[in-house]
Image (cartoon, rainbow, N blue to C red; front, side, top):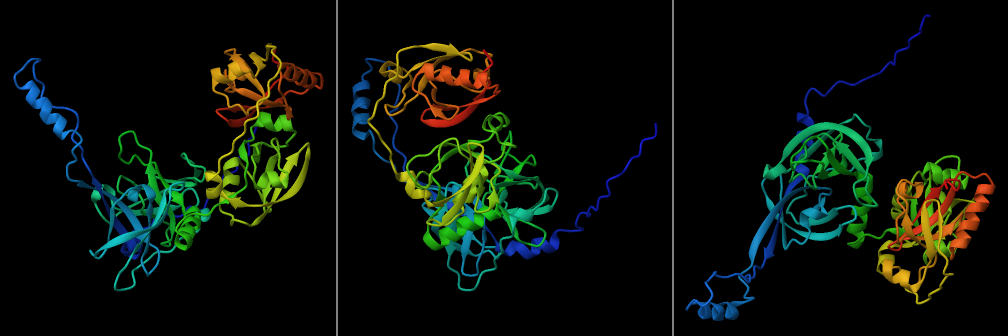
Length: 465
C-alpha cells in the first residue's frame, strides 16, 4: 500500500535580531511605582514571664495595665510596582493591588525624576488603577494596541521594575489567549516573558510598541518566574481606563441574570445542537426579568454577536453602556427568539438587597431516586441546612457515592428547584417528571439546583436507577 503524504507549508518568521530599538522606543514611558503606607503598631498583650508569687509580679501587672493598648508612632512601609504613561498630560496605568490602601504614591520616570501621583480611580474586578502625575513638560507615552490581534506565538516585550530592578526588559512569546484566573471579567494573555514581583502594573508590548497587556500575575511554586505570566488584555483595560478617566469609577452594564456554561449533557437535555451560550439559572428583579428572560433560557447572541460561554456574555454586557438597549437572542422550548433589554448599572445592582418573608411548605414524604434521598422543605430542614425562608423546592437529604448525581456535585442540603424546567415543591412532583422523561425516551433531564442561594443546572439521566 502506498501512502500519499502531504506536508504543511508554514511561513514562520525568524526571531528579531535585537529588541534594542523597541526597548529604546518604549522604555521612556514606563515608570517605577513606590507606595507608602503608615502602619500604626499597638503594644501587644505580652510581657515578661515571672514566676507566680514573685515580688515583681504585682509591679509589672500594674505597668502593663497602664500601658495596655498604647499606640506607638506610625511606621511607614513601602511597596514597589510598575506602570506606564498613556498620555502626555500624565495619566498612568498600573495594577490596583500595587496601590491599594496606599497613603502615598510616587512615580519614578525613566529620566530619574520622581513625581507624586494622585489616584484617579481603580477597579478591583480587573485589578486596574489609573493615576495622575503633574510634570512641567509633556511626558513620553505609549498607545494601547488591539489585544484581539495578538496570536499565540507572537513576540512580546515586558518592561518593568522586577524585584526593585527598575526599567528591566524581558522578551518572550504569547503562550496562550483568553486565560481566566478568578474574576468574571478576566481575559488574560499568558506569556513566557520573565515576569517577577515588581513587574505588576507594567506593560506588555507587541513588536510595534503598542501595549497589548498589563502584567498582573504569575504562576509559580516559589514566587519567581518559571515562564508562566499573565497580562490583562488591553481590550479589557482600555474600556476600564476610559471609564476611570471620565467618571473616576467603573460603570458596567448589567443584565440581571445568573448564568452558567452549557455542558454537552445540558445541551442534549435542552435540544441544543452544540454546548454554546450562557444558560440562565436565575432571573432576579431587574432588566432581564422586565424583558421576559426566564430561568432555563440559553442566551446564544448579544447585539448580533454569538455568545460562546457565560464568561463571554459577562464581558460583553459589562463592556456595554449603562442604559443602552441590547438585543438578546435566546433559545427556549426548541426555538430562538430575540428580546430587547434596557441594561442597568452593575455597581448599583450590587448594592441592592433583596428579601422575602414568604414560606411555603411541601408534603412530608421522603423518596429515593437517582441515588438521592429527597424530601419537602420543612422548617426543620431549613434550620438544619441553613436554607433561606423564601427558598422553595425539594431538599436533598443524602446522595449515594458513585451515583451520577454525586459525580456531578450534588450533595445533602442542596435544593432542587426545577425538574425539566418545571417548578417542584414535593418529591412526588420530582418523581412524576422523571417518569415522564423516562417514558419519552429522554437521556437527560435538566434540574435547577440551589446551594447557599447560588443556582446551577445539572443534567441527569432519568434511567439511572
